[in-house]
Length: 409
Image 1 (cartoon, rainbow, N blue to C red):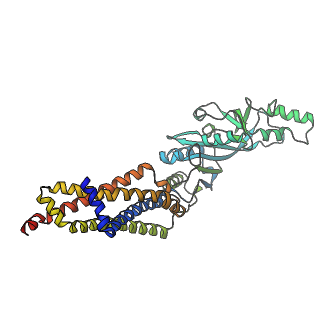
Image 2 (cartoon, helix red, strand yellow):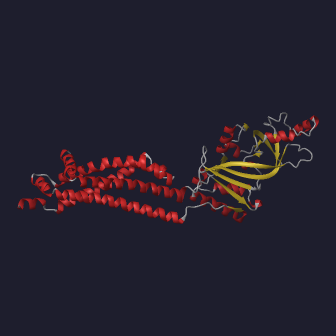
């Protein structure tokens, strides 16, 4: 170790230019290796993952009679588990007769019945994201649906109390008329409709809560078989935040909807990465890889030049009893003295100076790196470089009859 360190210092004393070039080769190789990896991951995010920041998808329903409750549930539960987990809310609208037990004379009772749900593990569940959003906004009163409600035969609903207030407190109504409306809706207090019943499509549902501005909400599984829908929306992400649809997930949803509904629905196209941009990415990644390999090769050749200049001293070491393996280990340690400090400088420069600037042009590059990734890249670089250098050193020591030549003089 002491001899290797002295050799390392001597390089910068006697061959400063060679030493600087060797360090620059390592720095260039490391920087380009990190850039190439980040660019590759950014490319993958565009190609396979992120699709232009689309967090929702609106499905156009061309033939509502063909989009039934049973087929809709079967369609979404047939998706891959990964796709299911990335859909936080499925919204389906249906126009049904929705009224109190005794509809007021002259009222049709038709209303938009809305179903907000998710699918997980092949089962229909509540949309936890939808619930959390409205709890935070403060417009959810009473109770919300549970996952058990989607599997239960007990019919429950959420009713818009503002809609009830409008119906039961029309300014044109006399007090007697208003009271009659209240009695018809069977709600003693318009602000608290919970616990009473509402008629939806001829069946009674118990009101367990209210959600301002959202009309009538029911679990989709509790609607009658054959119920049809007029609007369908998908929102992506997890239970806490919105996310984005991926190419793979889009294809999964697209194929499932066309398989179950055919021309009855239209799945909109989503913007995909430009083909020219894909070619550019591939070209830049290839060039970055080649430059990194060339830089690493140049370091090997520079160190081979250093060994050639030490040929006589190496021969003397061998004559004095230094084995090939010991000599190789000394030179390998010397290379490590070059590599590790240069790698550390390269890593710090890339992480804190280069990466923030690159992220402006390649938005997913920064997310590609983590302490684990940096460690893996270091291990790959160190392992491959040391293996290549060790083979070069052993070949140099074996291919030169240094001892014989020196003794012959």
